[in-house]
Amino acid sequence: MTYHTPKAVIIIFGATGDLANRKLYPSLYRLYRNGKLSENFAVIGVARRPLTNEDFRNNIKKSIEEFNDPHINPDDFASHFHYNPFDVQDLTHYQKLNAFINELDEKHETDGNRLFYLAMAPNFFGTIAANLKSQGVTNNTGWTRLIIEKPFGHNFETAQQLNNQIRHAFDEDQIYRIDHYLGKDMIQNIEVVRFANALFEPLWNNHYISNIQVTSSETLGVEERGRYYDESGALRDMVQNHMLQMVSLLAMEPPARLNPDDIRYEKIKVLRSLKEINENDVDQYFVRGQYDRGEINGKELDAYRESNGVDPDSNTETYVAAKFMIDNFRWAGVPFYVRTGKRMAKKSTEIVIQFKDLPINLYKEKGDTIDPNLLVIQAHPDEKITLHLNAKKGDYDTTSKPITMYYDKKHAEDSYTPEAYEVLLNDCLHGDSTNFVHWDEVALSWKYIDIISNAWEGNKAAFPNYTSGTCGPKAGDELLGANGHHWWKL
Ligand code: NAP
Image (spheres, rainbow, N blue to C red):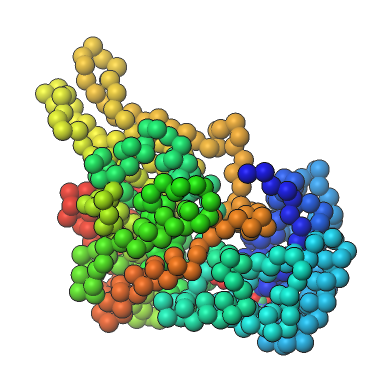
């Protein structure tokens, strides 16, 4: 798609926060440096603390320090940023903000376009949306878009309440719900690998695929986020959004066209086809874990229940393994295993597609076993696509051995990988909602996840049940073992 450089005033709520400093400003800088932002843009930072424009611009320059690009003067970039001390509860502040946006719109010739980015605690989202509308801040002449951060609700009911509040002020097609996994280069590659290769799509079904495994593991614990995390847990924090999004991309039918509506339609069909489970069956499909003390790289680590802000008797899971079955013609009988956890052996986001075994092994008499073919997509920290095949051993006999063929993005000629937030900000500025989450997806995934969390809430687990620095609880392996499968090594 050919893009014109967008023109807009970008209003960031939560401009002094962690997300803005660590992700949003560096991403805007990369877009600026890569020519994806023209000079016709301005950013208004909104937060309570009384900073001057100069303080704010110094923060911006600090957040882009690492780039140290000789072709770009950081002051030029920072000159697009303006600070507006603000209390989201105070209506007069919205009126002043509106006047300020108009002023910058004129100065930077942004055609009346406004992008509101809510990088604040979710309990403010509804209030901000309502006040923006009631005070006329969304009555602009150009386009109006809203980016909203996760978490989108705590369950279906709270997500619906939040959605109703936001929809009161914004239409669905103006709302861009972030799932930053959808901005990751290798996650976007799932579709390209599937739909741009004659080799895979014909095999992408229950005739040839044995099972699919999706892992997102971290070595870190909850660190300073204990209070938030203890209310959330891995199921809500990771499975409801990121993991189910990856499953949808892996399982969807080819879209009629590569446009947001057609892709979303296919993803929604996957969520609708998830095999229904009831609370009594949850243990057959889901495993939960919580990390105990342990050691990573020789460093002694505390247990989850010993972290700041965490209830010493907490029933919150820091690990989930799940088996999703998709009841449609393409996937009936193929388990989609997902696992995610903190304090695991390795930091990794990866997908393994395991193909079915051959009907016979011609090399058995020579003592060779034939490994299944695997297609592995690694999204983080490595960005690789690996195909595991079998080929002739280098000896005098006709014998076989496993080999791998791989593509490593790091060594590719066009090795620039944009950051997830950079991609998503760029998409939103161009009005492309493909890699954002539609309300129908949020609703379906919460309805499914609520069944599991309800079952778990009424039933205390024997936590802690895995040692920090390992691959999670034994039950996570047994979930696959019951079908004769095993996790491919982390
Ligand atoms: P944070 O560091 O706590 O920042 C919160 C921001 O909100 C600050 O700028 C704060 O500034 C401002 N604020 C708080 N109360 C306010 C009020 N009444 N009026 C105006 N401004 C107010 O939070 P964060 O980590 O950046 O997270 C922001 C959002 O992104 C959350 O929804 C979070 O779940 C999501 N998220 C964050 C990350 C991450 O890596 N940090 C990752 C994924 C999602 P003042 O104190 O100056 O008012």
